Length: 394
Image 1: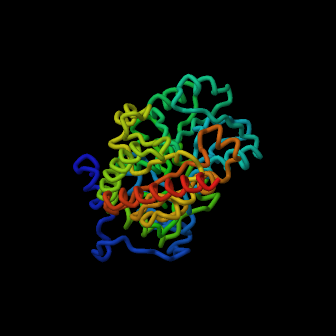
Image 2 (image 1 turned 120 degrees about the vertical axis):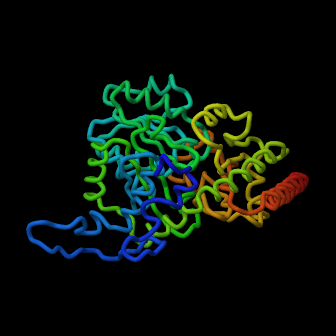
């Protein structure tokens, strides 16, 4: 099917588009925790829902097809998918990780894996020479997040995967920002692709979920064993919500991405904005790599206000974006990395990576781009006027 249809059509027309038992055009939600076995000698495909459930299995098969992998796995959260995949490592292994990685991943690597004798090195993965220098004899994994969170740095997935293979290491890629609609890391050489399906895949701020897709059958067997052993599987109601959300993935991403481009270009020209981080801007240092390995720059951008004094007033004056943790929803979401997504990262580590107290991350939703720009414009002007008056009072 993947050879006959475009990605947009695959989102709707796959082996689970019709329930074979009833003809229903929605995947049935199978709430059963256990399944009756009709023989003591031969068990059926399903026995216990932690091990396999038909509703979760449908989602796992759909995401595997969309990412071009051999098998998919659905977890109770993005961090459950990431953490379970990290369990493929063993004591004494070493992992090289994207420098400005999501705060939850940073916490997992620095506070959990280290307790089990798994070493780590954070590196700017846009610098391939630095990546090579970070590799040790016991390096078992290169972990990339591209574009990275929250500075939108772009890692060359093909190059990183080749480096990993030359050292006998695996490559994991967090594809949450791009989704398989815009980027397919397995086709570029990665071994496992990971998602917080809470974000763009489900797209409606109504469920928490994680997905992993594996390229190799043997690796898939190992990850399944860990999924079954660790048990952080996705519930069937949430699996159904993710599948429903994914049906509109392409149209949502197209709309949000087009708006994000306009907003990034607007912000780039504003006097109260110091920096704009978005791979769709021509001045982005890795914009060429993004064009080579992805079908677009995505719908997430970050920007740094001229000074931290503007921040509180700016946030208070905004009317449209939700000010909250998370991203990838139908509504625009503004986040403050220093106190939200990267709160687990110590201040000195954030500052060293360029995650300043004036940095904001915007996940663009489905609102009119013109309305969002007008809202940002009035909030910036209000914050600027307020800052000037405050300075005059001093």
